[in-house]
Image (cartoon, rainbow, N blue to C red):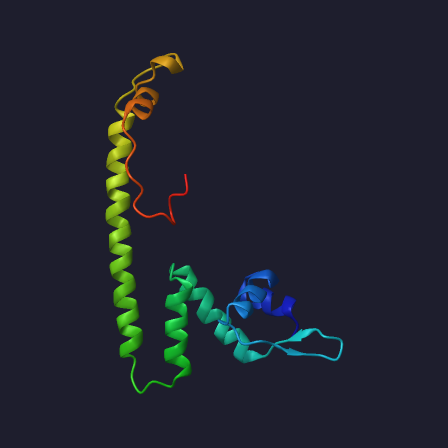
Length: 143
């Protein structure tokens, strides 16, 4: 099958398929004499696995680890179990961060009641007068 059909079957775009190939998550497709990519059922299965992992918000590295366990023919699924357990921990930490964020936003929202001029808005005043925190890491805070 061609890339468009694989994309349709797996509900993704051809660009996504090319990206996963480039990242080494999806094996390179065979090529026709006209240099078109051709895919088979193994690509469908692999891409479904990747897409379902990504739908669970797994990182590419987590997907690679899972694929390595699948490809390595592990005698048991301990690696997969550990990976999912670790991901559950990451999700829990994110939930905690988002809960804290919601609390901060709720407190901020309480700073302004009714309609005022923007200059008198408690939210704007709080955001402009509050000291800014130090970035947690340089990668996620570029400004």
